[in-house]
Each structure stands twice: as C-alpha cells, then as structure tokens.
Amino acid sequence: MNAVIEPSRHKLSIDDYMRLGEAGVLAPDDRVELIEGDLIDMPPIGTGHMSVANRLNRLLVRRAGDDAIVSVAHPMRLPPWSMPQPDFMLLEPRPDDYASAHPGAADVLLAIEVADSSLRYDRDTKARLYAGHGVAEYWIVEVGARRLHRFRGPRPGEAGWASSETLEAPFAVAPQALPGLVLHSEEIWPEGLAG
Image (cartoon, rainbow, N blue to C red; front, top):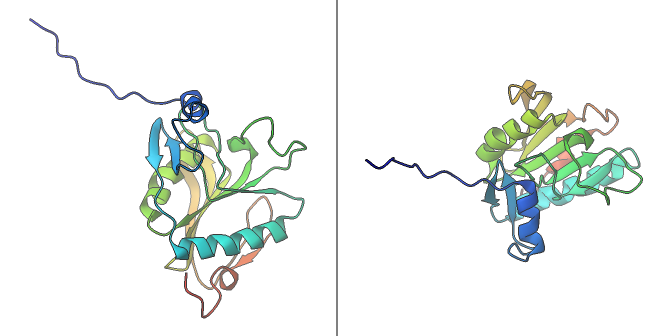
C-alpha cells in the first residue's frame, strides 16, 4: 500500500527573496513584496492613490524634520518570512540612514499604507502582520472615503492591536511617538481636489 503524500507549500524566506532580486529573477521595478513566505503582487497605483501619497510625502517630510526618517515604499524586515513595503514608514533616525540593514519592526515609529483597492488586504493581512511583529503604530489612509484607520499598541503574541479606531474627515492626527507631527484631513484631501 502506497502512502498518500500531500503537497506542501514552499515558503520563501527573506534570504530567498533577496537572492531572487540579486539573481535578476525579480526586476527592480517589479511590484512584489514578501508576505508570510509568499510573493504578493501589489496592485497598480491609481491617480487617487498617487495624489494622496504625494501630499502625504510632502507633509511627512516637512513635519518630521530631523525627528524621523521618512521612508517611501521601501522594505521592512520582519523575519523570517516577510518583507513588506509600506507606502510610508517613519523611522528612528540612524547615522547611517539604514545603509547597513533594512529597518525592522523596532525601528518603525509608524507604518502607513495608502489604500484604494487594497483596503481589505491592508486592514486584515497587513494589520495582523505588523501587530504580530511589534510595529508600534499603523495607519491606513483610505483614499476615496477620506478616512484614516489607526492601530496602536501591538500585541505580538495575538497578532492584534490594543486599540483601533477609524477617523472620519475632518480630523487631526499625530503618531504616538511624534505628537508634534500633526496632520489634518483637509491637508490630505484639499477641498475641490479629487482623491
């Protein structure tokens, strides 16, 4: 009698993922990220997403100053199986500006995803991933609805958050680690502009 062997999924580690890039299997402009051992194609960026991201970029850089490094669409190392690329991270300043290693969860003061078509994925998969690894705070900026979902107090053992809330425009919000960095909804979505 032959034993039944079930196929198993082959998860990629961060090292595997990096080797794929170094070997040219993944091109520098491929829009993929490593999430829990799987390569995930990121959706195309629409104009609403782009305009909100451009405004956030200007606001975050101006307001963070030397208190944080604003990292745009760069990887975060969450060993051993994940290397997401949030739209923005506010990082602890380091003299080498992270030349020696990608930032890990402990380096991230705030992770931000701008959600257009990706809201469910960002709210479920990404929120669980960031909490599970201890990212201090996570925001989802929901483009079309003009709202912000804020998650604070990661519970790594449970992959959940101590608090979560949804802020409807008009609102003012600041990261817990940088209370002086206040963003107003009307700056993210100026009156009369789409997106």
